[in-house]
Length: 204
Image (cartoon, rainbow, N blue to C red; front, side, top):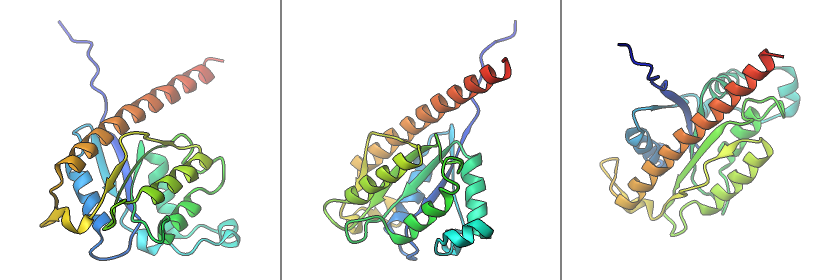
C-alpha cells in the first residue's frame, strides 16, 4: 500500500548583513541564525554585499551592476529574505539601505513584493536595534513585503553575548528559533497562496 503523504520541499532563504566590519556582531548573529535554522529551511548569505555600489537611479535606468543583479536574482528565486542589521545613529546602516534601494527597483516588479522577511539585529546598546528594525519595517511596507511580526529579535549588549562566535544568550537563542519557525510558516502560506493564484489564472 502506497502512502499519499507529501513531504514539503525544503525552503531557501537569502541572507544579508548590514555591516561591512570584519568583526561585526551582526555577522556573528547571522552565523548563529544559520546554525539554528530548522531542517526545512536553508539560509545562504549573499557573498558580494560589499561590492554593491552607491545607488544611482540614472545608472539603474541604463544597466544594473553585476553584484546588484546577482542579489536581485537570488532574492527573486528565494522563498524568504533574512536580514541582520546593526543600528547607526538611531537608524538603518547606509550600506543596508543602499542595497535595499537597489533591489527594490523597478517599483512594483522588484521581486520583493510578497517576499517573507525575517529581521534580527545586534548592538552594544541596551536597546539593541529596535529603531533600525522599525525603520526597515516601514521600508518593507513600501515594497509590499511580508515581515514576520513576532518575535522581535534585539540582541542587546552584543559585546557580552558571544563566546568563540557562539551566541550564549539562551533567551535570544529561543527567540531566533521561534522567529525562524514563523518565517517557515509564513513562507509556506505565501507560497501556497501564490500557487493557488497561478492555478486560477491558468484555468481561465
